[in-house]
Image (cartoon, rainbow, N blue to C red):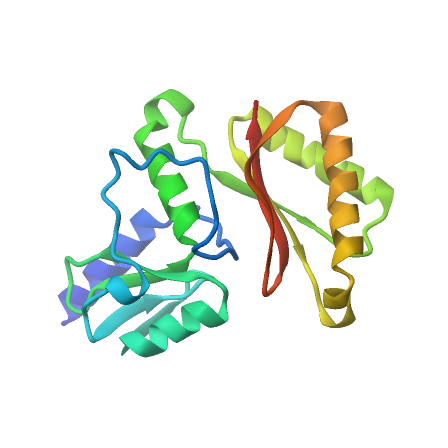
Length: 203
């Protein structure tokens, strides 16, 4: 059992190192070519009764019942993905399925892209224009390095009822970024339980 636990720890350390946690949902539409990807089992496709769970923050939760793991994923607006069946019970990760496929595609093209990944830029609901400009320069840096950028705005309390204002703030950020460099939208702006998010990439 100790050897098995060490294997899982080593696997996760090597496999997920440097991956940022998304807060999206299965309905996310990314521009991903999945022709050559072997899709993992996700949500109720998973056949094990128990899974060794990694939550959306990368924390090793331990062995839990499959139904409990699926419910935790749903509560987070994410998916439960089986990342390996080389141990018993299998290792599953709570994250967005669309982003998982996107990252797999990037790994396949790593030799050409230099191992690009999805970087995150978080905007604040009450963020001033100057701060939006700072975030735009940050996103510009990521895009020029060849990485995709996930733009996120979390909404709390009464902010959740002011979705139009939040979208207007995001659009102002995108306008500032457009003045710095052209970009393309990989995933359209989407609302999830935590707020708004979208993914962009360099044109």
